[in-house]
Length: 252
Image (cartoon, rainbow, N blue to C red):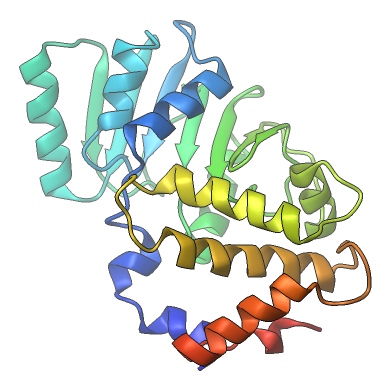
């Protein structure tokens, strides 16, 4: 099957990322990268159980931390935990992020994969005050040039600078061309950032992500060399032979 068909065969909550929670170490890495401090008002869109909110308040002492999620149970769990630890200046709202108010935010963590949702949120993000930083994982916001990168963490700052996909990739990888080593290193960084240490399929995810990175680079004319690297050929073969997943058709 083609990789698109494989992705469609996965459970909806895996595709949407609804049940994927960042490990606590990743929140700390993100906040250190952002140099989050007492002057910031931090929003986490899709906050889940609120771990990021409490780390932002308790360890990085932000002025205020706000979590928004449409899952009633998760918001209740977050509120209960917040009351238990008796920490102040945090809020949780159970609502749709498309209608949520966030115009006082200085930093927003936004990690979603739904393209329609992302496009609709772009209209909201463009109206935020100048200087507001929106951090994404894996890729920048559509048609936006990142202002700061420590992959897989990417800062998009208002007002946005326009960029095409080629310009985005070159900015993210900080290289004139992308080879297999680059693709594997960055795919592995992403896998480690979103996974807990006991996840068994990390290598499988890294293989998929490294192929996606390299194929995108090849199609945009920014892969190093004209030939398909042997490791790329080998991994394509492994996916096809052992997992019945085909990615060759993505090459233009």
